[in-house]
Image 1 (cartoon, rainbow, N blue to C red):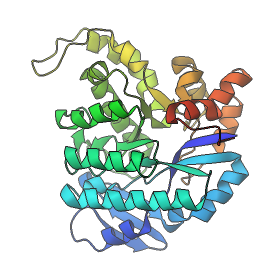
Image 2: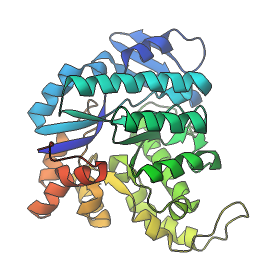
Image 3: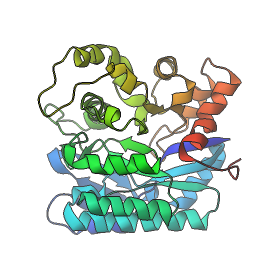
Image 4: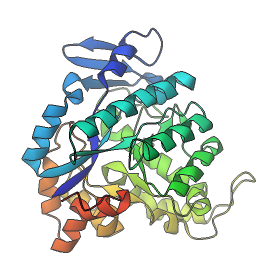
Length: 330
């Protein structure tokens, strides 16, 4: 049985709302797909089928997925800013909770956050975890063009650590769009760069040293992190931090070793390298459903050169442990 930690379900009323806006983020419906223009010139496509629970359930059955951990995905409500962002985050979370309740045992969810203020964000996390039963929080690779290591977000990270729940990162409209002037370059490369930048800056800032029990899942096999962590780690460890940053007391590799990644690779060789780099106990099954090629990941995971016990960890054991799932998941 597989537990999919990377599965999207958009909230249609939110996309409809964006389609009525005159400022960014704003959307338009064309041919069964919402195209949402975001900060920096990126336009995200959300087909109506991405809101279809029945289609997701059928695909899960076909792929042997017993449970999916749902995230709303792009475009996130944090793009709106302020109270409006927090209000829409709550509505999205209520929708995800309704989906979970309507299909017992099939779904869990990551809490969507608006980041309108630290206080309201913490309150929404508490509501999602304590009242709605969500298993962790969802954060994008930047918060409305602010890097994730920004000090204003640290009280939220401190609270997340105190709840002993994981964070699941996902790319969004990248901070840097220079030279990214054709659509394939955004999801194909810029998303991976933004994810990598976010992860490396979190390591470099000392976030994982300050909050050593934070648990972060980086999607798409960690972006470029598996391939550059040695090089950038040497640079970080030789770096003299500015006055407003703390020097790392341990090697940066100690922080990199704490990261989890999912199996959304686009080649068997890349996934195999991630297994060697992070180990089976840091790799979680994911599909990026309902985006294209989601059916390829079963083949790649089944083809990994590892023991049956390690494959079981990847397919469901790590998710059960990290998300605190009970024996009801079988």
